[in-house]
Length: 144
Image 1 (cartoon, rainbow, N blue to C red):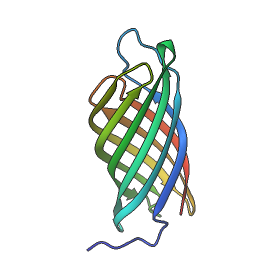
Image 2 (cartoon, rainbow, N blue to C red):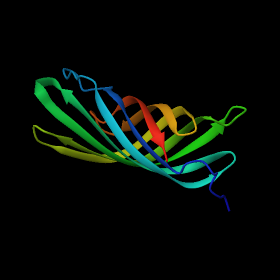
Image 3 (spheres, rainbow, N blue to C red):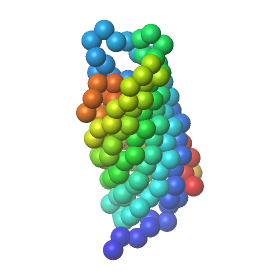
C-alpha cells in the first residue's frame, strides 16, 4: 500500500480565476479562487489529493457567480527531482448566481504545477457540465 511521501500533506492556495466558454451575450471579469487540499495516498510516482475550491467572478449586469468545487485529483510527479506535476481531477461543482439560480453538475480538471519545500504554484483548467462553470486558474500556495 502506498505511504505518505514525507512531503507536507496539506495545501492552501489563492489565485486568479478567469471564466471561459460563457453563454453568448454574457461577459465576465476575472475573479479569484481559493482552495484547500490534503494528500490521501502517495508513492514515488504521485499522489491522490482531496480538495475543496471556491471560485468567484462577476458577470454581465453585476451578477456575482460563486462556484464550490469538491474534487479528487491525482498528481503525477515528473522530472528528475519529482517537483513538477501534472494530473487530472474529477468531482462536482455547485454554482450560485447572486441574481438568482443555482446549478450542480459533474466537474473535471487538468492541472500542472511545481512543488517547492513549503510552497507551490499551479495552473489549472476546470470544467463543469453547464455554462458558467468553466475556467482557468493560476494560483500560489503554501504546503504544510
